[in-house]
Amino acid sequence: MTGFFYKKAELLPLVEKLDHEFYEVINTLCNKSKSQVEELGLLEGKQTSSSYLTMCNALVIEIQQKIAQRKERLVNYVKTKNEFKNSNVKHSLQIDSDNRPIKDLQAIEIKDSIWLLKNILYRLQMATLPLYPETRHIEIYKILSSNMSLLEHNLTKLFYLEETYLVPKLNEVEECVLE
Image (cartoon, rainbow, N blue to C red; front, side):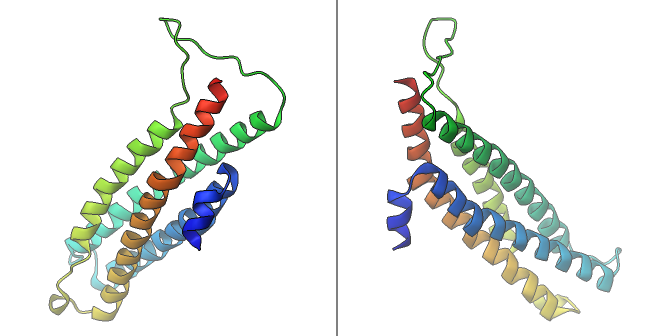
């Protein structure tokens, strides 16, 4: 049923659903993971903190920045396009030096952003396998590892939905604007 919504939804409701079900959830998971990294850092002391904690913290910060950037740009873009669509104003095309219309680059930027986040996802997969026997606070490490796995799962699902439904809808909107 969810796939049906994504397939049939207009662009604005689609972006709002992605925001609510993924961007916000990923942000919350990032905040929880950062808190767990801090807690483990305090429990273990700065000198004995593992490279796993350092890697998790760096990845979480990077993910949070990329998702926040994407959310801000995408939501603003979609709202602008939606306002334009609902107005009766003719779109004035921007022309490049060869007198060709310049399309909006939002779909291309989303694809590039997906590629960058997939790179982070690959590093995240490497970070989800700590060696528990070497740690003193195994339970907290397991919770952190679970959160990192949830991040990976949510990012993977988000990429699929964006590539399958969002990017084609963005391309559709850009084509309509150019007509």
